[in-house]
Length: 376
Image 1 (cartoon, helix red, strand yellow):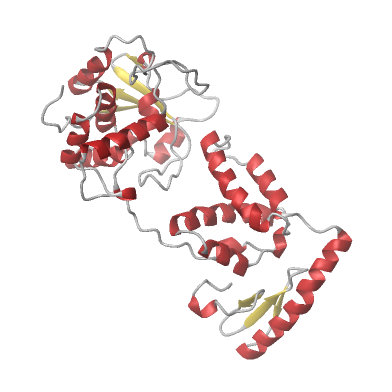
Image 2 (spheres, one colour):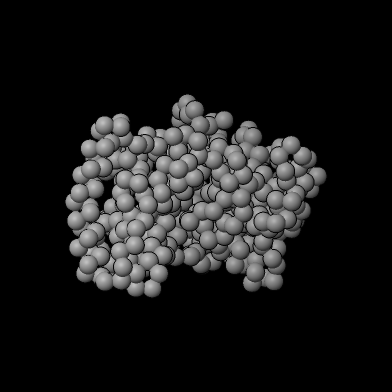
């Protein structure tokens, strides 16, 4: 087995790995083949250092003559260009931009290096230079990149997958009913509506702001959930693909929907607002539309303004997304399963929806009442 990253392995020469038991083995930096180095640690270390001095220089010379292998930078560009979700669809633009930022930083370090020349030590050193959360996300990206490279025969193994994922302590705290009510009391009407709709339905911010009045018919809200892939920000994401649910409108939910209409603003969106001035935005379909990022930023501004959580600071402050966690908790506390409502029935959902077939909606009920003292 290849060595894990720990304090006892920091001095091991490049290309030298632990074998079975006390044995050592050396990976040839040119051919990628492994060679037994015996069980004597000192002799194996000395031999590995000598071989590295000769072979790693030879690698550079051979590369100059043969034109070299595939460079990390070139392969990273190709990887991102062909990146797909697990269900085969293209990744979202936001996800692509996130990957691009990470790859740009990686290419500054390894852009001109051949894929097969990037060693376990090099990967560990780079990951160790990052914060735990960044290290975890970059490690995941590198694992995927090298998996593809190995499958194409461009490098003998995946040095990123051998590393250990760093523990990332969760900083963000959960909402409390009392705290969320303080936030709600300081919020404009459109944000109060978004909070209530999220709490009753457990939906994500992107799905909340994209609900249209045309999605409401036959006594249900029809939601084609935009994102049900694994997301490190969301503890509840377990499903790949799109979730299609119909939420039955009960009296409590109808009150919220009626309040959304009470401003008489001609908007196609249930959650909407009137901006101070109309500015053309290519991302908006309508001038009253609220984008997910604006919702998050405005919610955080109100959290700080209301001083709902005076003992929390920085990343500890719960975001709009954390309303989802509180909603699921309240549903469970009320003895109602929030799994189908949240869109987490993975086996059932993948059976219900196949590309090219009729969409079958999962019918669900709202399981709770709004916990606030007074609904206005």
